[in-house]
Image 1 (tube, rainbow over the protein chains, first blue to last red):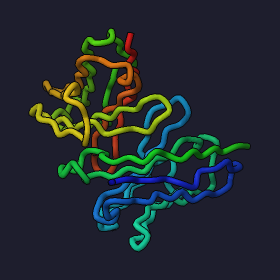
Image 2: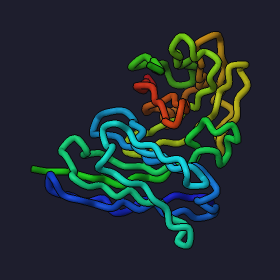
Image 3: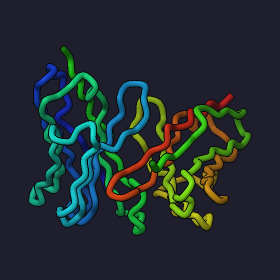
Image 4: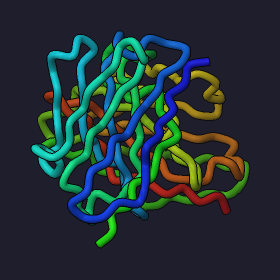
Length: 122
Length: 111
């Protein structure tokens, strides 16, 4: 079964750090474009970060640029999001999602994880 | 700025049909979009990709009750024979110059 499972969410203080993980099963994560998407409580979906399949193209939303870092561990078939200098407005459920697994046109986020909750408290 | 516009809410009776609309910004009317379903307290689920010519690519296990179409700058998701489990939020999404773009979502209520 093709699956993405996030972990690492927690309650953290403003200014703190956290590393989220996304483990893939049933497919090779490094063969696909991977994304982090977040959803603040009661709000819509926001694209946070992207890393291309070959790892040479990385994108960050302006709201997290300079604070978040996306990376992969090919051996562990996993994606990570290192979050530093956390702010209250970073409070959200964080999802990882593939792009291009089913949609060869590379438009759709076509496999989603179940999400992990990050709460940033003062 | 590339924006996807969705109506905030839609409703229809059990067993009826509902048609959701995602409108692309002028100048981006040739883009394909994806539709995602988010049931209450769950993560998003990829439903289908809808191209400018109206063709669509469904995700695994998506029932035939869900269909997609296009007209100009608008992309549609039609849910036929509405069931209670179809309640939730529906988001359109596309990809543009290195970033994912999401619509604001439409909350579907089954009456």
